[in-house]
Amino acid sequence: MVSPATKRALLDRTALPWWSTVIPVLGLVAILLNLAKVGGIGAGLAAAIMIGCVIAAVHHAEVVAHKVGEPFGTLVLAVAVTVIEVSLIVSLMLSGSGDVATLARDTVFAAIMIILNFIVGICLLVGGIRHHEQRFVLRGVSAALSVLAAMAVMSLVLPNYTSSVPGPTLSPSQLTFVAIISVILYATFVMVQTVRHRDYFLPATDGSLPKDAHAEPPSAGTAWIAFGALLIALVGVVLLAKDLSPTIEAAVLGAGLPLAVVGILIAALVLAPESLAAVKAARKDRLQTSLNLAMGSALATIGLTIPSVAIVSLVMGWPLSLGIDAKSMVLFALSLLVSTLTLGNGRTTVLSGIVHLTIFAAYLFITIVP
Image 1 (cartoon, rainbow, N blue to C red):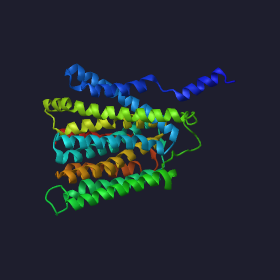
Image 2: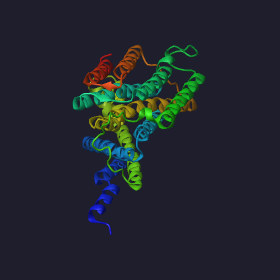
Image 3: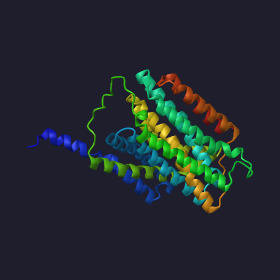
Image 4: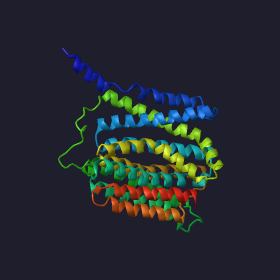
C-alpha cells in the first residue's frame, strides 16, 4: 500500500503550477482577439500577458532541461526560441514591414549583441556577486566562440568586401554558399555538444554540487506537457511582440529615436525567456548552463536564421543586405576580443560581467546616437 507521503511525492512529479499552463493559453486568446490592437488598455493587457508567457516559458524550459539533462536541456530553449525568431523575421519580410533588405541583418546583429554582451554580462555579474568566483569548462566555450566568430564574419562582415554585386549584399551563389556553410557549422557544433565531446559542455565540478543537483527529475508525462506548453508560450511571446511592434514603433519614432531601436526591442522580447533562464542558472552557481544557453542561442541565431532568410530572399527575389556598418564591425570585434579574454581561463568574476555590460551599453548608446 502506498503511503500518503509517497502519493504526494508522485503528484509533485506529475503536476505543473496552474499558472504555467493557463498563461500560455491566455497568450493564444490574446492573439486571436487582436488584443494588442484594441486601444491602450488592450495593448497594456497584451504586454502583461506577454511577460507572463516569458515567465511560463522559463519554467517549462527548466522542467524539460531537468528531465533530459545537460547539455541537451540547454538546447531546448535555444533552438525553440530561434525557430520562432526565424518565423517572426520571415513573416515580417513577407508582410513587407520595415526595410525588408536590412531586417534580417539588424535582427540577427541585435540578437548577437544582446546574447554576447547583455546575457553573458548579467550572468557573470549576478553569479559573481552571489558566488564571488564561478567556474566553467573552457574547452566548450572556446569551441562555441570559434564557431560564432567564423559564422558571424562570413554572414555579417564578408558581404561588405565582395565585388560580384555592389553594396553590402551577396550574389545568389555567394548567399547560397554562406547559408550552406552556416548550416554545416551549426550542425557540427550541435553534434560535438551533444555526442562527440559532450563532456566539454557539462558543468565543471570541484567536489561540490548545487543544492538542487539531486532533485528528483519530473516524470515523462510532465516533461512532454511542459515541452508543449513551452512551445505555446514562445509562440505567444513572439506573436504578441509582433502585434505590439506597431505600438512600439510609434512610441520610438514619437520619442525621436532611430528606427533601429525597434529591432533591438523586438529582439530583446524574443530573447527574454533565455535571458531569465540563464540568469536563474547563474544564481544557482550553474554558470556552465548559462553559457551553454547564451552561446548556443548565438550560434542558432546565425545558423538557422541566415539560411532561412536566404531561402526566402532567393525564392521571392528580394534584395538582402547582410553587411553591418563600420561602427557595428568595431563593436562586434570588441565583443569577440573581450569574450575571448574574459572567458579564457575557465573562471569569472564580477569584473568580467561589468566589462560585457559596458560594451552592451555602448552598443545601445551608439544606436540611439549614431
